[in-house]
Amino acid sequence: MVKPTVAEAPGQVHAGREGRAAISPVARKLAKEHGLDPAGLKGTGPGGRIVKEDVLEAIEIQKAAAQGQVASETGIGKLKKIKQVVTLSGIRKVIFNRMYRSVQETAQLTITSEVDADRFAQFRKDLADRQDQLGVKVSYNAILIKAVALALKQHEQFNASIDDKNITLWESINIGLAMDMPHGLIVPVIHDADSKDLAAVQRELEDLAEKARAKKLSLEQISGGTFTVTNLGPLDVEAFTPVLNLPEVGILGVGKIA
Image 1 (cartoon, rainbow, N blue to C red):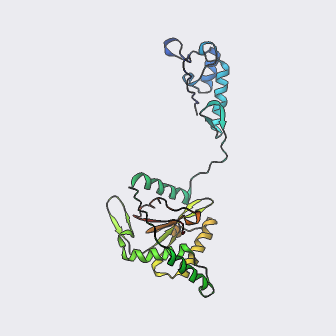
Image 2: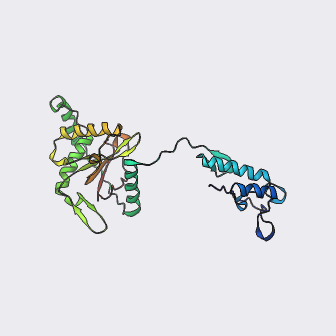
Image 3: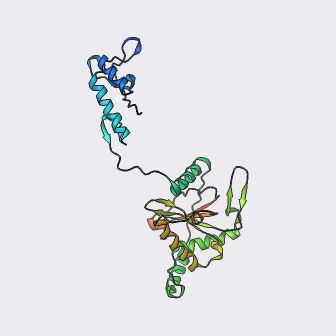
């Protein structure tokens, strides 16, 4: 049961004999019936005495709190109404727990570098000109995933995971891509990204995004990642600190292409 408490105003009288709250017999009986501690109530009667009306007001606050309303900091008479409470469950809860653990348990180190993306942008344009031949329009994300996968073959220390005892270097290169969906963050995984061509990566990305929106991703499609890419460029973000997707040891955050 929720027991509302109210901050004291300077000089407010609350104590009666032996330090107990000064409260009328009727108010004391009513408070006891509703499980309220008189010490947590503010009296509006003479000398700060707690009267029946004070207890009734506290009871209303108690009911409101039980229904999902929260007392504001400025007084028990003003309430902030909650529009919706979304329970963390399933995939969303797993990702939240990973992110929370990451921030709490790991040293978050960010290295920011600005690079010339002219050739990168031109490469995508060339691929767009070959859209009919490829069968898909290759996105920046697909190119990033493929480029990262190839880079990890040369820098295998980043294609790894860590626990309390070991660092495990993975032979498989499975790239997760952070996706912001209406129902929350999700990180689908492109397995063996280094062995797939750009068109295949793009088709798989489109399939994963569609299933993510429909909440139909399988456990395999969100598991087994060895490195993560998060791209906030479309949101006009220049630089940011991505959060490690534990137990992975590295993550690439990409900003906008100017």
